[in-house]
Length: 330
Image 1 (cartoon, helix red, strand yellow):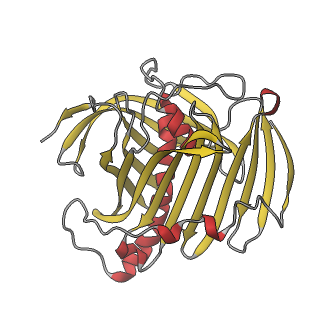
Image 2 (cartoon, helix red, strand yellow):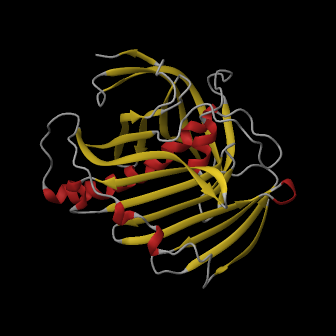
């Protein structure tokens, strides 16, 4: 892997502007009730929880990475075309996030993931958009609006990624633009900090590089049945600031009973996103993905320093295949 040109930039592709691409202004906070009526802590405690909930909601983006466990070993060359077998344009997934604070579960926010047909540089493509936002109650103490956009070819090769974030009133932009010269992955990275200062970096790598949303779209079309409990996968992920290796571990299959969808029970593939510091490895997030042809993320558990957060699928529309992973539904 090679890199070049880390430097502040005063200009960028004219089709991209910092404030116009954040997307947070178009997101209307949804109310939504928690799993059950519960008394909330005092406002001073809520202020603390709000910041923790922010980290929980930010971690929801890692939920997308969990789908990567469905991926077979990555090819040695930059990218390989892959037929989409898992989703149809128009699919929409909605999630609800909760945070646990001293045995109390609090609604922290919502997220939606929508995929549609589009064009990019005049060619057919898929556009995937993920919106996350804190709940109205949390907004009073810490407001968060994130918009993630990814564009891939019809054969699921990444072309462009952008994350616009308004987190506590601070605006940030992460952008990745892909090209494939001489059979290699070349990614142009852009990061704009809350002060509006830009940093750019170009990374060239002989192996595939993905952002979280492009990998989600691609990985959903793989068959994960060949994996064994304990199998590990390492892959490369771009986020606009850097390209880093990530690690996932397959944990096996387990049934998950959803309280968001009228007590529907899913048969799921379960796996973990882990971080390693020195010789110590810790589990950061546990993912549950439907064990059917759709491979839809339905649950994640996030292990935070000050508590646990959970995200649940609350609705799925425009799904391509029957949900054969449903083992019980009332």
